[in-house]
Length: 235
Length: 256
Image 1 (tube, rainbow over the protein chains, first blue to last red):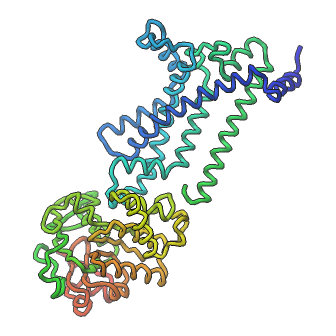
Image 2: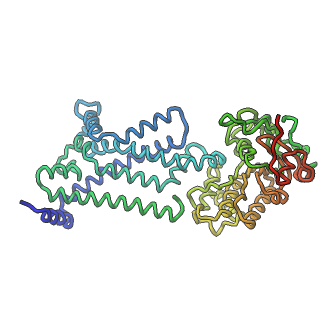
Image 3: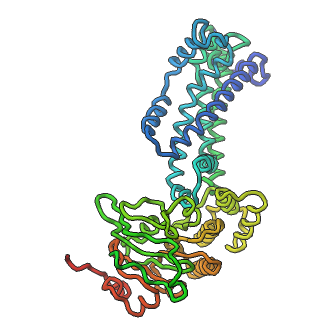
């Protein structure tokens, strides 16, 4: 029989001693998530800025699709990526299944629509303010897009952090395409699920606490950034 | 209205071809005609004021002339030719509420120069010159959005002038400013005019009109009520709408 206090105490011990297995899992989680968020930003920021700043045929449809994709079920994304990367799938030759790369692909698919849809909203609001000034100055399409992204940089950073929060907490898709292989594809969320089912609650709780800490730090960062932006009158 | 083409230039500029002209310019929105068949000319080197009661279409006219909105009918001619991208680049506009980019004062000026293709040392020199002209050198590194209303409007004016436009549109640039800030803006406008920039400015301020205006376009209900040199119109207004406005009375158009 175990008590909650004992488990909590052991979990804190794992964190404070920075247990080797624990650190490996945390570092892989951060590597996979940060890579996916960076790729998602590279795709989602310009895509969102284009949809937010320009009027074109089909813009409404693109907006609806982006918004709908924000709610993509992770297990479905995991399944689709699995089918694509499996030996009999079209990308099977790449042999990426059950690797961190497969997890990055799945997370990128999940996070990109979030980044793009939120960026579109941010850029659209700012463009409403700048529209006539840009037209008067004769700002070209590319310069307009980059200027809007730059001037909305604090909001855009918030968007990226929202994407990070979504990715780091994801479990369904990475479990399917990563396989939760020890020392290879085991990340915080999949480990929590596995270790809880095995009764190894100390490690699960330690990872849970770290995951919560990351969520708190991310939110604190967002608030601090916004506050500093308002102080500097850039927001 | 076509017979009401402006005759507001002085003897010096009478023979000068129009810098900008519009012919039969109309604009409809929401099923209503907001600008109604305007034909007029803007001559180089002049400070042309657009006046009239609220809702007369003054700001709309500026946006049409600057090409920010497309007319429903009519055409714009820049030195006798249809208004194109090159002609647009020779114009600039300052809005009633200045739009400040979320950057420093200096970065606002740099941006305007960069979009005009001016970079490097030339950009730095022109930006410094513009800061000095607008008396904002000490504030170069400050975020533009923390400046006072008068400082923001000076920056907006400097940003518009930094691209060396030939024609500058000003939409009530001093409407919310105190007398000292208003005078600072007027000084900048006069200095720009002395450097050859033609001005088209909306204002409600008769005192300001007398201080800086050369010519006047008076609008009533989207129509051209009267045009001419400011001095002549103020001395002897020909239209009932202009007379009513100058006397501070509400004007009601006679029933058709």
